[in-house]
Image 1 (cartoon, one colour):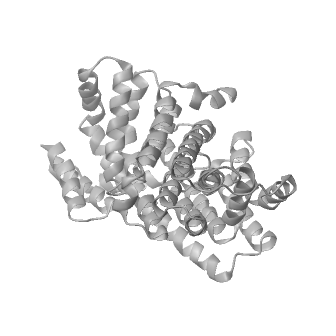
Image 2 (cartoon, rainbow, N blue to C red):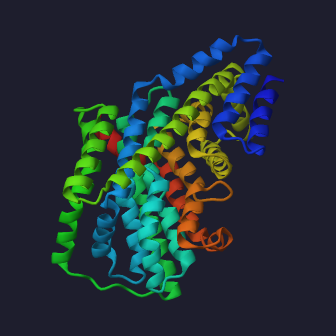
Image 3 (cartoon, rainbow, N blue to C red):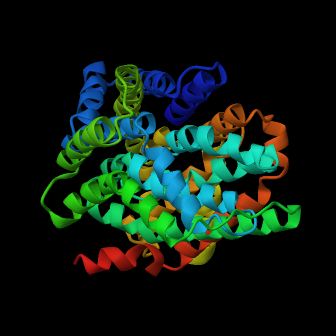
Length: 425
């Protein structure tokens, strides 16, 4: 009965349009009241959920991403990608993917990627004769790189929810899968462009390519400083996030000189709002997860999944399918906090390293950002591109397939995610 009250209240809150954080909190309170537990325990769980030092890195990463979005870094990364890969058939589609790989690895946010790069590239692609749905689809799906390629604040959430998985290993583990996913998306973008007969750009020359790289280098250094500081052990994740935000201010203000006072205020307000939402989710999800553990939900789910099949390959496929479906209907941060304590023990029981499972979860739930009905990136991309969601979804399937291919490879071939972390040991 307790489980029915817990999930029933949560589901009722979502159906009524209640924010996920409030639905989680209401469900947790209902569960505590039903079990006769003192409510101060619920508040203790809420406070302990956000009293984690590594969570301090999240506002810094979010702030750095906002600064880079408003400070001219995105445009310079687009010019670098255009100089490098634009001279092929449908080159702007491949440029879009390459730009997402570069900017996503700096901002750490898929939505920021879609918004910043979409506002730059989608109008240009439409002007060059690309169909609006193609421009939106490439932009939206390639933005998933932002949650896989480090630094990613969603990986920090996973590390906290998983009970202390190394953030530095998670960061480095996302590099190869992120590049693999972008490679698959680039192939699909090229194939669709050739089939539709899109034009090729002119190669600007090696001198122009070198100049584009030099101009973009200060922005690229943001990711190098943040990730390098963590991996080298010189800085903690929180310290590297703070240093990354300072570096972003310096680059956008004194090097590129494009960060206006209005843009700075917008970045601050947006960062505070996003951080508040994330922290509220972490707090309420902590109380919710306490009840999940009390009701032995991880053990029950593990028994249900293993009862379907004892083949590890089949069980991993089932886990992927469950995460994909959940990603279509719920917010990514909430799912990381709720699902990690449930599914991680199942994956570890099959011999999967927690770091590998973290990367698989990022790719899974990242795809959910591109799918209706709750796909935030899909909504943003369609608004920027002036395309109806129904129109975009009709032609987005090849791009979904590209991400799924990369996801299956990362799931069943541990080397894709574990090779670089193994070098740290």
